[in-house]
Image 1 (cartoon, one colour):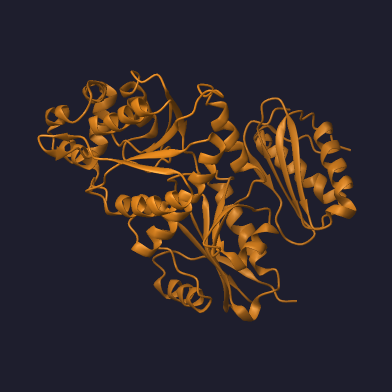
Image 2 (cartoon, chains in turn green, red):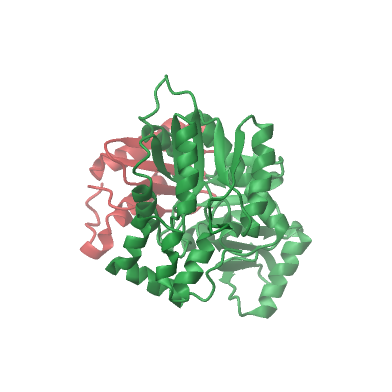
Amino acid sequence: MVEYSIEKIYPSDSNNMAKVDALLQRESIRRDTNLDYTCALYDGHHQLVGTGSCYKNTLRCLAIDRHFQGEGLLNQIISHLVEVEQERGLLHLFVYTKATAAEFFKNLGFREITRVDNQLVFLENRPNGFQRYLKQLQSESDLVSSQTSKITSIVMNANPFSLGHQYLVEKAAQENDVVHLFMVSDAQSLIPYGVRKQLIVEGTKQFPNVIYHDTGSYMISSATFPSYFLKDSETVIRTQAKLDIMIFLRIADALDITSRYVGSEPFSRVTSIYNEIMQSVLEKNHVEYRIIPRFEVNNEAISASKIRQTIKNGNLFDIQEWVPSTTYNFFESEEGREIIDLIQKQKNVIHY
Amino acid sequence: MNIAKSSVAGTLESSDAQVTIEPAENELDLDIQSSVLNQYGRQIKKVVLDTLANLKVTSGHVYVVDKGALDCTIMARVEGAVYRSINASEEGIDWGALK
């Protein structure tokens, strides 16, 4: 009986990484730029027959050499990756895979959340993870009654919350009965989520018809849209954006959301690609796409990147004209100074 | 016994079972996936619930991915997951306490 072994491949091990890349290429799998763990499966002759990788709570770039398929080897790789993730404390995992491979994952405890173009399938290793998230969103929405008709939504990162963000919420709140405000809770932004959320809530207190939700793992997260945070190619951004928006549609359905408000995007490339895809997918699915021109100060659109850059350059005072007093007061506080420190230590603060 | 944190025990290899347990407020729910669900689903459910009862676990989300495991294996994996979720090996496990 053949004994297979699994070994970790270090990113600096260019020789073996190249072999892994070659295997992925043979099996027509694109190698993701951003991975934080890679393993290789070897047969008894130390020949590379399979590989699998992780990025945070997602499993990616899995492949078994075609001559070795059908022997339950994917099983071994997945079990190994699940163990690696477990050691990191990540038990709720997501997978992106080709439609043809989705069945294998379904046999290993993964359940489908949604698919894109019938080519790419998104799965999680919980039977009801997404459903539980939807129920939680619904339970947070007691503002909504059978009388409520105009229900809209906004998804914002707010890194940090500015007058521009406030303007967008104001327009949505004025023009609709209820606004579902989704805050990007994935921990990748420079300013920690706890702070971003606090500034969003404080800066929108005056609008009583806003309901606040975390996006969790299901929207603009490392699982659904890692290229939002980490630079990647246009094709990748487009595919991931589509997936993220498909998930948004499911959420919109569960909450009877009929439109989504978005600020115009003159600066960030990834956000503008995302908005472009969003517009076409939403329109096809009868959800209104409302694009609001950015709030301007001195004929210039407000940008969170610019705010971060200004803070980084040591000119905190200058951000006053771009942010509400709630945000500025925070940065003047002791906790705010710790965040300023974080920003100043970061090499690049501009969102690509 | 109170499930403090999420944990996993077992693998997805043939003849094994992977048991995941997550903390829950006031409910004990069980989800089983098995290629032999039709033939052995009830038996698997019984073994899992009995093991949880013996360990005095009254709340949690339990997920089982069964790959053709025998009762003893399922029981061992449930124990493993529960003990891991309460960090039992640091306190000292009472081996032999379970029948």
